[in-house]
Length: 313
Image 1: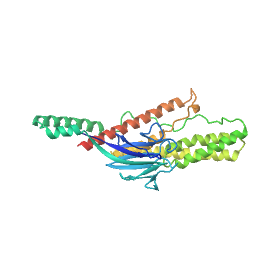
Image 2: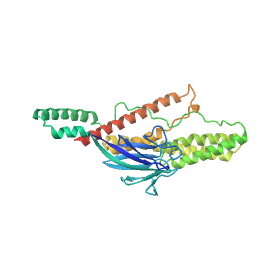
Image 3: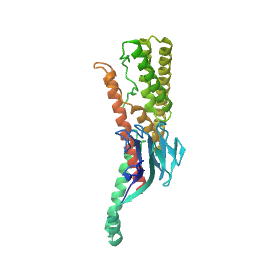
């Protein structure tokens, strides 16, 4: 019986060690983060370095960070098609990705040597028709489940960010460090939205520490950068929400899954627990955020199931 496609990763480490990893899915994240299907050492890979997905039997890769920038066959890239012979370098680790169609060989052998009764064909046809009718009914309205949360999730906590340093020199050193971190993450934000979201509190903490250090010009610059980045990411997040709704309404499933993964990237940034105080509105905001993320995941799974059923027809 034919099963869903799987991604086969061939991984080559700097010390010459090689391994193969099969992911029974049509998408996978590559990085050092715990949520990644392909985990790489943190000294070579960012938390989420690559996004791999299949579209109509073709494997595509998208860079989620440029620190360090991944290369494909020796050339830097942000996104593109992966051939089985393509080698993607993440740090000093080489990756090759191919698409497999997994089949149960025992079942295939049995079917080739066993005669099937006409009554079994009739029964099988009835079962298939019932299954198709069920899923057509279930998915005929663009997979936009009635369980979709009404609230729009916040990307940042509402708690004011303060400087942990109380004297000028340590405050200035921390401000410069936070500013550098924020600038680096902002540069990666076009490819990794979660880095842009994470950059905002870095700018806010830098501003607070510049204020403590008596550097008003740098404080104003950091506040302005935080506000501009926050406004841009908020607008982009809502635009991607509208694109997802449009893709679901028009049943453009591949585009819908792309938008789902994009929105999940914005929400992938985890708030610093130190910034969230009990009794604040952040408890409610976190609940809305979690409900929305769960809804995105459920719709993604439903579309994946629908695609698998379509391939079997």
